[in-house]
Structures are given as structure tokens and as C-alpha cells.
Length: 186
Image (tube, rainbow, N blue to C red; front, side):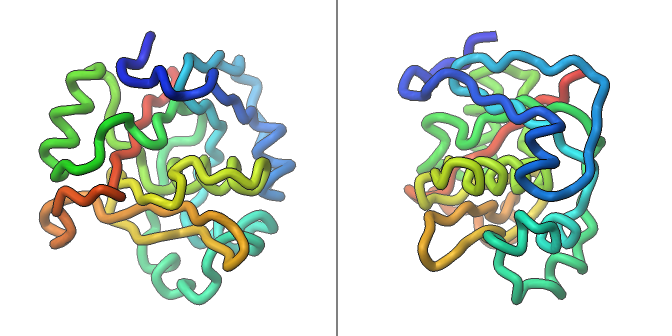
């Protein structure tokens, strides 16, 4: 699958289960074949954890805001374990409302859906920890569930996942708010 509008992106990035475990310090194993990433995609293995578990992981303790424990524990968002293809951010998805972002994503490919919060947060945290590079370039992304900025240190770029729907009151078409998208690999 070729992702329209990703020409500015580097070749795809892959973080398999072993890399995720090493980077985050969380146990995760998979016998599933590791998918190849298309240009502009990020492939990660996500182990089914929630934000609190991610925050308390050795990797999370280094990069995620630790004063959000009540918030991380309040929302027990999880997704199915396995490999995910991600667009973080979806190209040209800023300056759009949530509904406009969804229509834009459907024009890229109807198979893509807004990324689950924990999957997006895992990918942002893994990449930032491993490379020091913020996939969002100090911007934010909307995801499938409402969330606020999840990873940051004073001396690094921050990785953020922002509110997802008009119901949250944060549905303005900001320059710095993109959409994050995911496809669960079968």
C-alpha cells in the first residue's frame, strides 16, 4: 500500500517485539511474522498495555510525565496486542477538525482508522527513546480516544496525543494538531 502524501517521509520504520521489549523494558514476545513498512509508515509491536503500565515501564519513566498517574489510571484504554501499521502524523491532517481529519484519512485509504491512544503513545515513546527524534516534531496528534500529551522531558522533543472528538471541546483546526492513524496487522 502506498501512502499518498508521504513523499516527505523517510523509508518505513519497524520496531519488532524484541526491540519494543528492549526499549521500553516491558516483556513482549511474538511469533507473528514482522511486517515490512511502506514509506512513511511505522510498524510497531504493541503488547496490550494501558497508559499507566506504559508510564511505569523503564522507558516510560524516562520520557512520560510522571505526575499524570491519576489520569493514566483513570482511562484503562487498551487495544488488541499485535503488530500495527501507523501514520504518525497523517500527512496534511493539521488545520482540520476531527471530522475533516477523518474524511482526509478516508481519501488516503478507507482501511486506515484513527490510532488507538495506547498504540500511538507506544510508537511515539519507542521512537523518541530509541532515536531522540519526535515523530510529531513537537506537534500533537488526535487519536481514537481522548488523551493529552503523554511523553515529555525538559531536554527533549515531546510526543503528544491530543483529544479525539468534537465532544471533548478540542475540535478546532489547529496548525499543530495532526491525526494519528493505524491499521492492525492481521
